[in-house]
Image (cartoon, one colour):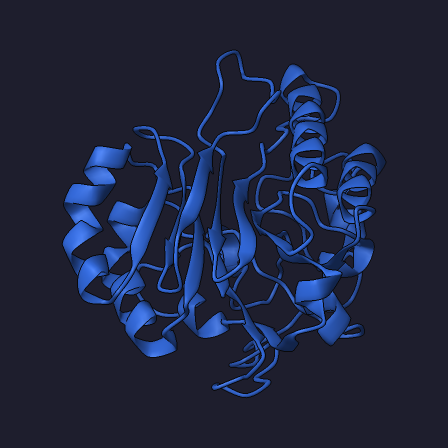
Length: 286
């Protein structure tokens, strides 16, 4: 299975379809599709059907949007989160379905914008609702998606560069930890406990080529599923070249690993920056 914030599925069609043909995932969780459901179906329904995928969609025009593509069944589809807040209305940020006996959640957690802001408190409340929904569900569960939280300082290129920013604050990390306390394992970090591994790089200032990124796209699996993991890695190839998303897909193989345990930094970054204070975020003031 895989999770990928495509940052507009319409813009990413020339990358998405060849990637599906290359990696052949059985289940794909997409985030930030930015399309209403009927527009998504019109754009990709035929292409996905030819590849054997059913699609569970929860989208809206211009913003947000999530999907689950599955070649191993798609049952008990639920859109949205029961009890989740809106901003001010509910947003298309969650869809769940049972795929091959595993309950799969594709989620696009709110950004939070500025610590302490209304949107930040919305993010924390939304995460609490997600925890409640997962807690009430079956034991064989995976939560995949753009969590908009780096779980630890090891998941950003330089903690000092993110001082005063969202994604790294203690309340956000605590909310993520409460979700994981349900028994969910961060399968990529489990597989690569000491590796420098990111999933998101800003488009600006050559952040990808300098490997100045964050790991905010996660696959969190309950014990019955985590115990089946044979490989877990970040597909950096999909972030290179023309017209990429600013996120790379995360791929997790259960039971068998047809691509092998490729690792989180394939291909290697061209010029990684590892010295603290050597680089700033593009939006940081001079």
